[in-house]
Length: 429
Image (cartoon, rainbow, N blue to C red):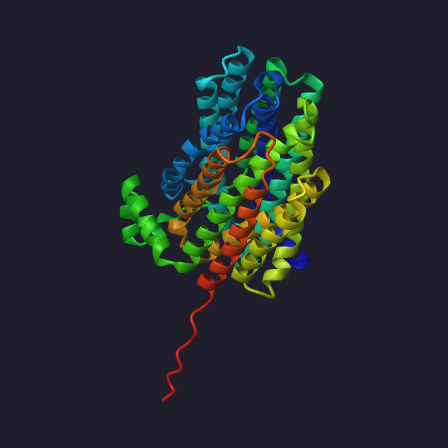
């Protein structure tokens, strides 16, 4: 892996794409902590499980619908242009959110503005994934994904730490939150400037290489969506990979909702700032798990298939939650958060690579945008559903055991579906 990584990093265009990712994802962390602290951990805004789930739904479900539309446009527009312009647009939108917070208008208009900020990010993230095969060799995609995606996630956690430190410095009320959001807007502007260093035309799409039916599909969004859906349905590895990550995110949404409530009501009862600190610690521990998965996954998939590793990870998620989750105590839950971070990133790296290897470039943007839609929609839907089952402090043995059983069942079903069909013995009489 080290040799491949050195070769990948020697690529000037990879480094530029990577720098754009890091700058944007660092800012994502700052932005999201500002929102989480303001919405979930402000004493004047103590949300019930139902209100917390509604906040997740408002900020995730609607903009997930943009996924397929973003994909069609990513397959039609220059990906470099998307990577340059979307961070600049997000900077302007974040300034609008800051103004709403500062003036106390944090109702429907506030959530609508947040929705648009996050929705625009769908274009950026899907374009990054679709662009990666243009700056690294196919044989190095697993390592490139492990390095770029995971370090981007770790940097997002670091950005969350920066956001938390800024909150300590300027406060978590309206004025402090607005100041943090202004800082995030400046960082988004920097991400757009970094992306502008990429050569024009490098990242595709190369429509002259696409079959005629693909160019026709790009003529209309809805026609393109139908064409993309048929493509996915006809390619079993891609369809199973999307199914696996969607299933994992469905369960991960349940666990994250439990974590939020546990940190606020059980691990630091009555102290909003302490609850946010514990929640940030849980996210940091989970981020360490993401980093561990980045180190382990390339080495593992050189010895076993990506499908086999996904199966092991889903089963490992069940074991981690069963052993470390049921006590509902801070330290064991943190250990479980680390292990679930390994599961989350390991599955994602495998799915990213399966899609990059098996999907034609002319369809790659649409497939990754649908992937992104499912990734977020499943999480938000599970969080919304879980709110009806969880007590106020998030400690529900029945719900946690249900998640454990689901992980085990998912591992078995995925392995059975992904196993290659046995070859026919034509010489047997």
